[in-house]
Length: 105
Image (tube, rainbow, N blue to C red; front, side, top):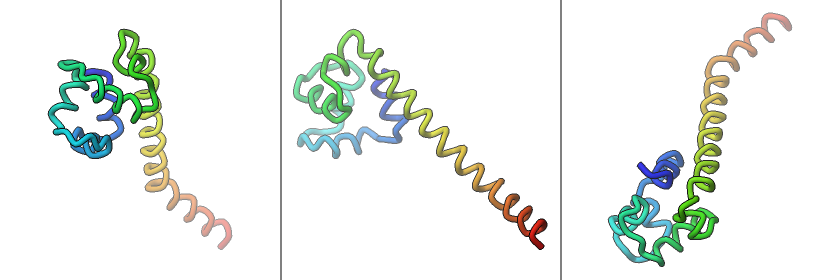
């Protein structure tokens, strides 16, 4: 799995959803091939890079890892924060409310 593929997977974005978001009028298979590194179709690379807010060189160049990995880390941190919030809401909100009732009578 390439870093680009990992980034889209971390964002919960399927290749079909990316194809629709890019709206290039091409099939998902072509975009998938570019992301996996099997093809280097310039206009698809430009669209993907623009979608990520990066240049083509930053997204597909030899040092792409330097720019893509921090985006993956941001997604991991965002998912971690969401998960932590859900757990706190599930387990701690009730406990705090019960404690307040017990103290305040």
